[in-house]
Image (cartoon, rainbow, N blue to C red; front, side, top):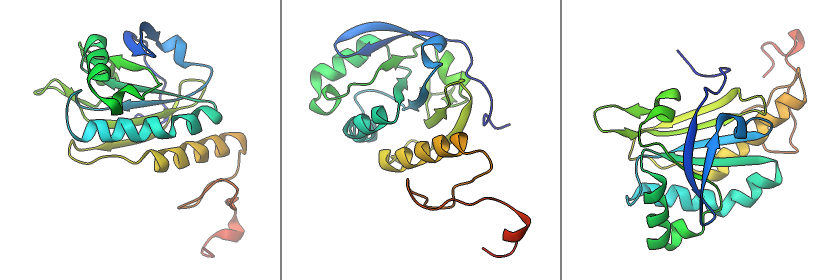
Length: 187
């Protein structure tokens, strides 16, 4: 069953964020748009390319009121060690949540039980904590933060403009559609 339009489940976890250890809970997420960006493990290969790409676009996410949370089954201590060891990870300004028990990964249905790792899962939530976008990749397939940014903008647009929808490849400022009988068979 899809998690689309379901509500974020309660959680409490430790994160590494801007040189400090902080607690993050489901209550912290509500009230703003959020992205949960699951990845398999620290000190790996595809993961730093994705997290670095997200770090480069993080200011753009912040401009539209979105907080990003990276999540892996590593601990917050390992996140700090990775930031200390890697220039790519050191540039991250968003919280890196540790999920060593796998609770959050299971809540989002991305846990690979036999490996104790999360799939590459991306979840966009509205300010009420309702999941509006899901993208899940196998471990070897990296994601593109610019495409995620486009999807977040589309989700924000349709929430702010009931009755409109965003067509394929829609970008901010482009025309949207208003589904109606007149459009049936015309597109």
